Length: 507
Image 1 (cartoon, rainbow, N blue to C red):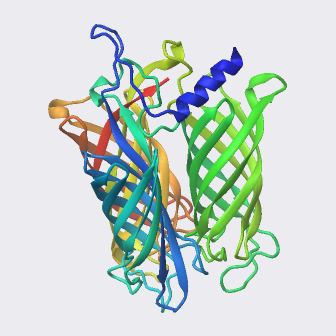
Image 2 (image 1 turned 135 degrees about the horizontal axis):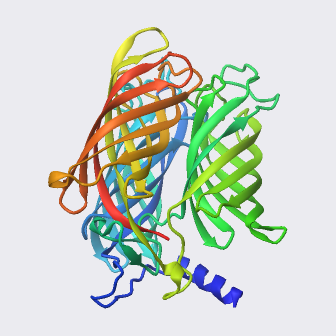
Image 3 (image 1 turned 135 degrees about the vertical axis):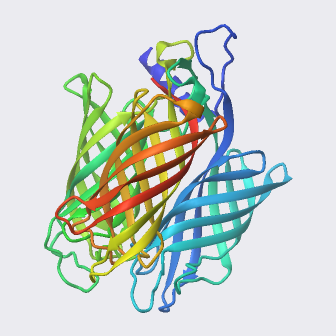
């Protein structure tokens, strides 16, 4: 029987999204819509102004706005040559034209912000990046491949590629969701809802570089490096998972270091106790910056993990292992603690209690943050504007979790990036759908010559949010951004965000 249930869970994770209609008088909220979505990766070669050659790898998540248009967040990073640490975070808009049953033409524009490895020969300016692309795709089932032409450019700097070939690989998905108006109601679904992840986690830990590790000037790395970040995870079957994590340096003089990795792993019950589990995980991705010599940026990671599933919903994890830059001079053992909050989980079978839950509102959107008095390492103060991806998820009607990741897009702080996670409080809807609230975030930041100490930063904000139709939300906020140690950085923050709201199940 246990084998049958596990097999059903695995099948549910692999099958296309399907919804089951309930009678109109049923007490459960129902999935309102299943929009098409896609996870897409790109590979773009380019020649840098200093004569070297690199390639940018990307991963994007796009959701259909209608039959022709899609939009979603993405990240680009250098993955070839000696340019590890160049990252941008932003959004892609895409228009598709159907040419035949298994081919389509796509025109895309990515608008992001970031940079890295700035010097006299490589200048990213304010950090704004544009990447237009025109590509022809061939579909095989849910997968598609494409070849096209594209260009990468930083308009306020000197980093610019010629028009060249690009390659893409993607997988079509479904985006099932409830109406945000169903928040707080019991709901039922036979597949994961929203983005499809089961957990969101806050990570924090340390790496101790080995004696052979060097910075980009060839000097030994002798200080322990503290890191803070976040992770999204989906469980395929009991104890088996894949996920995406991102982290940055928060201590140890490596501010500006950033990494993005994909993980797979497996754990098993320890001593016959289902809530205490031991296993291992493997990861691969891109990392660099903060003067660490990671070569092309390709990182590999492996190690054991110990996980405790608390009776109250969250889980606590202890990870250890080894990080290795395959083409650079960086390797280090690591240890970190992880606090994971449940988002959803794969239903076991239709009609089982695990298919039921409470509808909670999740939001995904774009943010522009203006910091009028940013202090730089050379002592000057200037205004800097950031472009960021934001995500929030209600845990109760009044408490939510929030994550914010982005980079400088205007000013003179190109190559500055940040990642923040935390909690917020919000009111009931007031007149005209207005809501007010407050949130506190912590995380890591650095690069672009901005003074952030070791890299650990915090941001507090008061905000108001207006409802635009059923799913769009416009938010404005005012707060303060500062370093967590000392007073090396403190500046007001003005935040404007446009978010897409949808209902997901808290099972």
